[in-house]
Image (tube, one colour):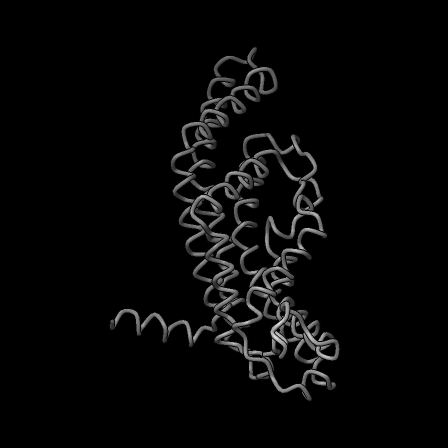
Amino acid sequence: MLPIVNELGALPGLELQELFTFLILLLIASLRVGAFLVSAPFFGGRMVPLQIRIVFSFCLGFWILGTLEFPERSILLGPKLILIIMQELFIGLTVGLVLNIGFAAVSLAGEKIAATSGLAFAATVDPTGGGQSPVISQIFMMFLIVTFFTINGHLMVLGFIYKSFEYYPLGEFTTYSDLVSAGLSASEILFKSAAMIMLPIVVILIFVNIAVGFITKSAPQLNLFSFGFPMTLIGAFLILYFSVDALAFAFKDLLTRNNRSTDVVACGAERWLKRITVKKKR
């Protein structure tokens, strides 16, 4: 690393000729974290200003700057610097996208529940993505974000990013087949978790619709729009109210599996399995 204290023992600082190299090192150390903050949920949403994300990425990069082993100066100041930048961006974006899969599963479950209960028309602008989504999806997303920060998921994910420098060091251009395969295998969380979350609520709503159909058939004056639609909405709100505890446990399990998948992507599938095997032996 560069010397932080000059030879005269004066105030801490950098020599002028070393300032450019120090800025390059800080930029490289912040790229992986910055790419993760751009692609990760909540951190990469519109509710977090871009200036805050940039400052936060440089702060984290400055924190991990003293723990990294950088390549030689000739490599950093040569054409291979472009490959190093692409490598850091690829790893950070992949980890953020895998984490985003778990949050997308909750949003998908909310959309299907809203379509079944008749609340799909109640759509507003999503502040995280910018598009329109049902209100139930936004409520689920806010519930998941609160659960994510409650179980210290943000600290776990940032820890995975920090450990990824150990398994994918700077300047070592190796095959990333483990990282790509682990990222693709994590995509099953999207549909599997969404089905597990929405299936109990959707089944109950189907029975409510069947009961409303019997009632409207026996009493024709109670048509579908004046009786069936309000009863379906009331039933959906009651089911969601009594399902809060079950949803909390489901969201916690989803975040646990998603954090495990993020760890696999950040550390590599084979390296992650070896690390788990060593822990079990100990």
